[in-house]
Amino acid sequence: MARRSKVVNSDAVDATLKPDWNYEAKVAEVERIIAQIEAGELELEEVFEKFTAAVEYLRQCETFLQQRQQQVDLLIETLSDEPE
Image (cartoon, rainbow, N blue to C red; front, side, top):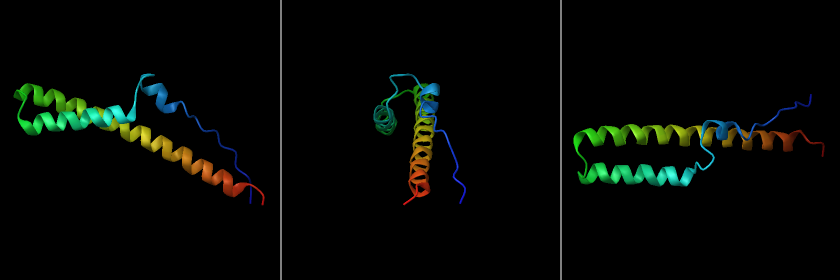
């Protein structure tokens, strides 16, 4: 079996997100927005603005998780490629 060499760019997600970006903080913010919308605390225009922000946060989270999954997959592959 030919050994493949892959380089993981662990900074790929960091290049698209601010340095202080935090997955848990974004999820908490989405939950807060959902609670505000459900409670009827916002004017209609604010609902649309908050909803738009929540969708963007969820996209960022999805990108972050996909890239981390790729890193895990690569690490598992690397382990299976090592001679026993």
